[in-house]
Amino acid sequence: MERSIRCWDCGREVDDPYFDSCPSCNGLLEVVLDLEPVKELRPSDLASRPLGVWRYQPFLPVNPDLAVSLQEGGTPLYRCMNLAPELGVRELHVKYEGANPTGSFKDRGMTVGITRAREIGADMVGCASTGNTSASLAAYAAKAGMGCVVLLPEGKVALGKLAQAMFYGAKVVSIEGNFDDALRTVRELAEKRFLYLLNSINPFRPEGQKSVLFEIMDQLYYDVPDRIVLPVGNAGNISAVHKALKELVEVGWIERMPMLTGIQASGSMPLVEAFDRGSKDFTAESAPETLATAIRIGNPVSGRKALEAIYSTGGHALPVTDEEILAAQMELGRREGVGVEPASAASIAGLRRLIEEGIVDRDEKVVCICTGNALKDPEVMISQCDRPVKSRATAESVMDLVR
Ligand code: F0G
Image 1 (spheres, rainbow, N blue to C red):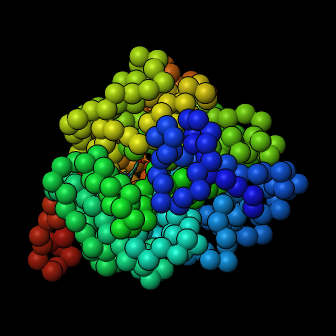
Image 2: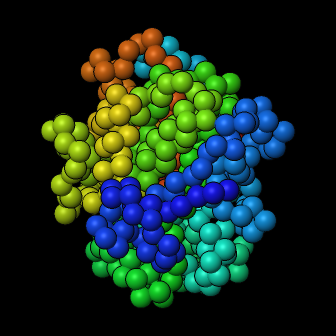
Image 3: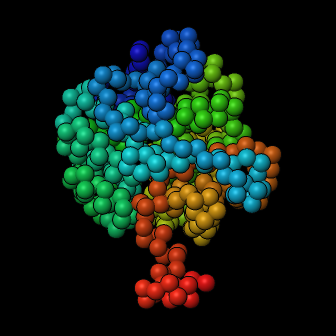
């Protein structure tokens, strides 16, 4: 596969794999693929491979012979027959990313990122994380036999994610400060070549994350939905989905794009604020706060890419409160049997608001990407539920209690 790494801002080609931004203008990097050979293919040519990230190898810029995989992707797309009429929309699908090997969408980018690390011969990888990236990286580093360092904002990582990073053997460092401070620090470590950085600022990560969009299209038989709604934190995912859409248009597999709609927590919404001003750039927030700790980010690295994704598809950016997030999380669990973590429920909470505000047409076909598993944050789940009731071990006693 012919490809280059280029600056998204000035177009300069960048060779050094340890650079995470453009040496000329400090801009964001991206992989540019030569898709000419893919134009010869149709989606059905890939259909004999299992659904998952590596089905889409013609769109991936790494050597598949070196692939480090935990069989990521291939997650369900649930049609929500109970919730759709309740929210007031014609067709609602939930892409359930909690079914990935470490329980979040991060595994899609990580299989490609760690394969790239193997290609360049890295033996130490690292990231800053609100939790899920660290859980994912720790698992893939274990599989690849690499050392792994993860920097987490002190006291602000959900229990399940912290447990995973420790369990898979990463060196876990608790940083005094928030995610943005942790990211700045780990970038310094990468600059010193102490580790190979696997945050989504690494352009190989979004390449794997494109696969969530490819799968949605396959699962909908290439009937393009009207809108895709997703939570936005560091803004890697929405940018990756947009890149995937642009590539599918380029190879002629789709003709139009869904409206990309990003949801942020109201205590942590620099991109919503930029969108409301009609601005292509955003102002970082210094003290982001939300119980959806996965998206507690004030200075999203790919924020400008995200704004372009939203503007160029006619989408939207909207905030939701923590209360709305919790209500949506419960609703999805109790009406559809789908357990997602708070940040993921932001997409459902956002959809409800979009419908109420008349931004989403009731005739739309909508896909919400639910990025992580409910078990990631057991404390938030439990805090919303009744405690178990105690009973003697007799049928009568149980019937009395639960009647
Ligand atoms: N949902 C979940 C469950 C996440 O963990 C994240 C990001 C997002 C949504 C937002 O995605 O950053 O691509 O806009 N989590 C990162 C982490 C920041 O460190 O795990 P994004």
